[in-house]
Image (cartoon, rainbow, N blue to C red; front, side):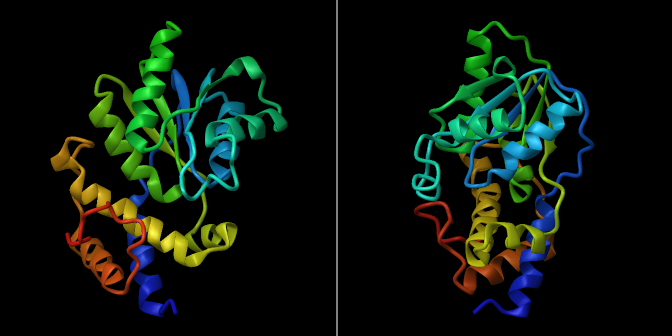
Length: 221
């Protein structure tokens, strides 16, 4: 049972994950693979607005996506973009990444191998992954400027689109856990976490929303 307090806490975490960057034209757009095809849709929308001349879709499969996207997240994103009218020559596919760090490093290698110069990247993720994606990218590709973007929507709208409220809360908790523990492991830059957000996170962990915590971690802040 998801309580009213659980939803209040989840809203705090959701709001914190939003970077509130204004999309602007960048050298390339990188759509980060996930279970959410909305990332592909938003990437296409930004492409149509002239925000980037080239798209990289990156992602293999995970326990969440292997059934719904059996050929890999990036391939399914590319198919979606083709359906929406993006030319095939405006897209590259990076099909091997299995986490956010690999999304960045393998996309970087792909672009470098193609001789494509990158000064700025429009980083498109799920709405609640903006901050995690940004912090990871800044650590692993520091010489490039990153602008975070996602589908503009509210938490209730997102939950309705995914049809699995508990999964959404678990994912939000897991994303924040990574912001707390990964900087010390060298995986991302450190981000300040406000006290009310940290307390909301702790309550959600105590209520059992723990299935997406970093393996081996106890979830404590």
